[in-house]
Image (cartoon, rainbow, N blue to C red; front, side):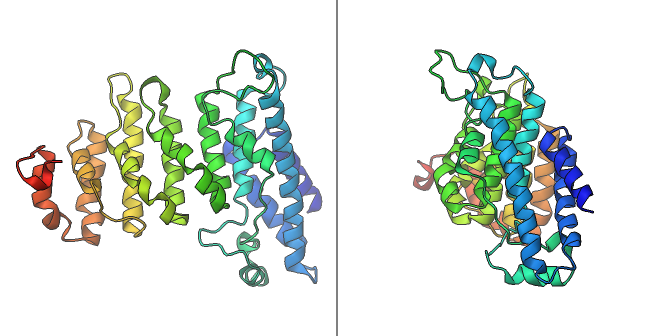
Length: 331
């Protein structure tokens, strides 16, 4: 059993596993730790200590790889053994490791952890465990979010960060933030700013990931995200041009699903122009966007609030027609 865990850990730290296998392998390590320590009198503390050890080791390996990439001379950044595919796996691994033991309503105590272990559920055996990455690793992941790497060696040129790495960095940094409210307060504007990007600076994967992370923040830190709901709602009408219509369609569909889910779970309310953004989405030229918005508005969202259309009908007539004849709508 122990040799199997060592082998799985070596696969993870080699960063040769495909993205879809990394999370599964981490869950396997957790399960093996719970089974291996089941006969220990101090079961709970042993499982937690075992998982903490390999989490720190994997964090260390991720930090070493990212440090080598970010701190290289920019012209050498992608040379050698570290390529974009491997870096994507490193970033993804760092994010997944951060989520070990996470629960949406976690409270950092041991009572639930002890009950889960005594109940024999390996999937819940370390709920509440929180091993945060080093400040160095956190900043390395964050450094991959901008369009260019930080100019560390005094070079006159800066290395551009690919959309692939930026997309992974947004998700990984978001996962790190989920377990650190102070970091969320410090960094939430980074995610919001990405939703403002348009034209050549905008990328569908990056923008979608930034939007989805803000959705996760809304569940865990609702009070911090509330002011950004109008910005998230603006993704329902993301910029569209002939070349990128199919790509922006993905962002708009993600926005519809995400905002609907948050409304249905009472994390956000129908405030401001959110409802009217949904109505405009129903009239979208993109059939996929229009159908999705129509199904959700006339289905679960209407079921949750049967008076939704009735209470907003007059306002919708004025707003959607751009009428300013009434003082209330003049602004």
